[in-house]
Length: 81
Image (cartoon, rainbow, N blue to C red):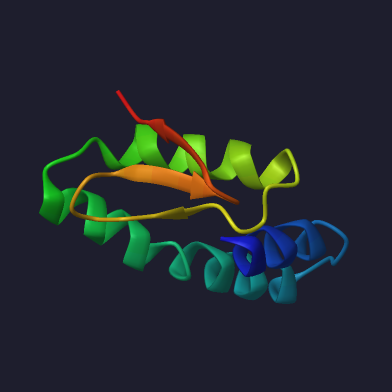
């Protein structure tokens, strides 16, 4: 997610076709967590938005477990509802 965020932010500073290419690469990097959520039966849009929010808050070690859909960041847990 962090690499996707970096690429998306960087693409906004570039003009032309390169912007579209880099933006598409950023979106492609989010396919794996989205697919994990879909396969686990969770709302992928909601989960990815919460994951982006945690990363924006500086909790870069926040991740997602597909079996319980629990975000963990440095021993802090909050279940996604």
